[in-house]
Amino acid sequence: MTTLRPTSAAVHYRVDLSARHEHLYRIELTVHAPAAQQELSLPVWIPGSYLVREFSKNLQMRGARQGGQPVALHQLDKCRWRADCAAGQPLTVHYEVAAYDTSVRTAWLDACRGFFNGTSLCLRVHGQEALAHDLEIERPQQLAGWSLATGLAPLRVARSGFGSYRARDYDELVDCPVELGPFWSIRFTACNVPHRLVVAGAAPSFDGHRLVRDVRRICEEVIEFWHGDARPPFDSYVFLLNVVGDGYGGLEHRNSTALICARRDLPRLGQERASEGYQTLLGLISHEYFHTWNVKRLRPADFTRYDYAQENYTRLLWFFEGFTSYYDDLLLRRAGLIDHASYLRLLTKTINQVLQTPGRHLQSVAQASFDAWVKYYRQDENTPNATVSYYTKGALVGLCLDLALRREGRVTLDDVMRALWRRTEGGGPMGEDDLLAVLQELTGRDWAGEIDAWVHGTGELPLAELLAAHGITLKLQDASLAQRLGLRVSEGNGGVQVKTVLRGGAAEAAGLMAGDEWLAVETPDEGWRLQQLDDLPLYVPPGADCTALVSRDRRLLRLPLRLPAEGPGGDTVYLDVADAARAQRWLGTA
Image 1 (cartoon, rainbow, N blue to C red):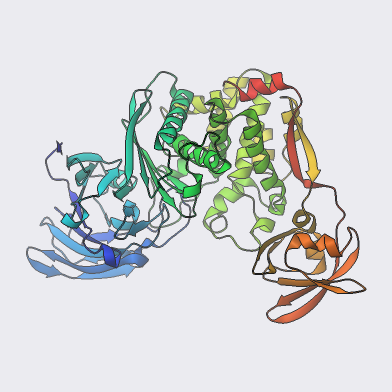
Image 2: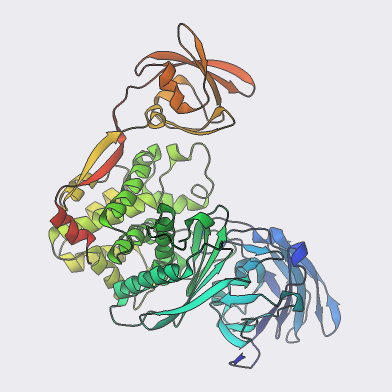
């Protein structure tokens, strides 16, 4: 049993797991000294995931009491309530939260596992956000095999992890997710800092010792990147990994991260070579851990204080998400977890994702950052034609800046990141002007032209030129049939379903649109049933004319199509090492 700081906090939450078969968390909120007409609200979004998700849709109010008497609760808007209470006397509010979401963003509860973020469960007590908050979770007798893991500071906690935790304020409370269940767990140290790895849902073949060995190497590489021999800005860290049949994603927090991956992507006992899926998982872990510095502490000035009731706009996600995406795989290379060839394969994938997005010609990566709330997280059939990802293009901006700095020979992007950390006094709010100031200070020249072109413009990035300066040649590669047509499709049940028609391609010129079912192709002599897209060249020679027979809203349409010739496309490239020594200076040690 751990016992710390026994005095009561101003705000106390008690979470009841007894309704797990109903997938309901039952919460008792006690406000020890409420204001008269106390207001309460639930966040509409969770920091790190830039979409209004309306968490209050899952909340069911059960009532409130003060001094043993019922208190009326009045709903003021979609996520805000007012209690008709007096000031000073403890107020207790009872409510439930439905938990059906397996993602890292909200809450889940069933007989096998529980997980939640405070933004989904913990009502915000207006006016008391800066005071201490306690979270209490007791384990029912029926859940004797369950444990609890979280980054919150323990107050009175059993060996299983169940008990009471304390947060300094509301921000800390909702920035520490909670994992519940019969999970696998191991503790380790990285650069003398305690870490914990929690894995729920793994198959029996899971090689936990290999995973913790590789995660430790990532942690050490990232800590040394930012601090050298100094300590990181947290006392301990927790990885919460939920393993599912099919899934992928992560969400950063101040001293923990919530992750999700597919079972097939975990390392397996007796498996010597890391699979591509496992490399992707390690990249995700590297990405979220790097965020502990780059966005959780070093953060946009727009996020100095989170407004949980509405969108929080910034034009800097290209830096905080994009530069993190640049470093996630690069740090795997530096840690020796992947080789040069694997790193270049991952970088090639990022480059091609950007090149195969026509929207890069319309939307700058700074505007993509601002539009995240309505575009990136609300993708549809036109998204590739109208937008660019601040993850992928932001990563390429980071690549270009790093390679340009290295070519000049004074500093690297590593030096810039660490200088920004110092400039903001150990991580703090920053703006684009801070980046430009640090670049000027470290190199003696103005970088506003590059940032304006690469970040605020829509022209092509100078990838080929900068890569060539470091021994890497960017070469055009033969495009796939789908890329030559300008199509993204899904295949199954013996048919081809059009998902996206890319701007400027042959499919768009023919009149195909998203939602069409491509049934067959007709030549001047005969017609052929089309079961998969790659069958098309069997019936139509490259460069020849044909007719695409499609079904749209149950209407059959005949669309004239010219099959593009085979060969390289401008949107498909690969990277080749032309000078291993120069490449080593970039990809080897920092």
